[in-house]
Amino acid sequence: MKRSVLGLALASALVFAACDNELVGDLEVMKSLNIKVKDKVSTLQPGKYASKVKISETQIEFQVTANNQNIKWKMKVPAGSNLTPTSGKVLLKGSDIGQEFDFMAGVETKSESSQSPTANF
Image (cartoon, rainbow, N blue to C red):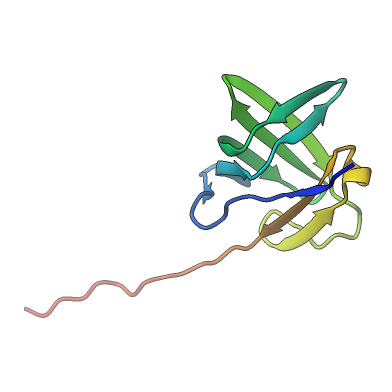
């Protein structure tokens, strides 16, 4: 069985939505990827797919829209992981999440503030 790493195109493909720790963006698949959901297997062919990811300290919920179909699955985050909804990284092995691929996720939150505008008259 070949293993692959599912990666998210993070360089501006995913942007924070205004709701509860949900990322919305595109999932870029480099080669065919089988996703097991309960007793069904869905195959994603290479390409970009609209996706949503919800991250909590205990699980990652993933939704991909492909061929007018929503594919949803959940992966448990191991206890003691340093992944939180606002920061951290985790690598979930396929054997632990029941998939043919490993899943790597990282969250980083940056906060910036600008100075108040001033004007001289």
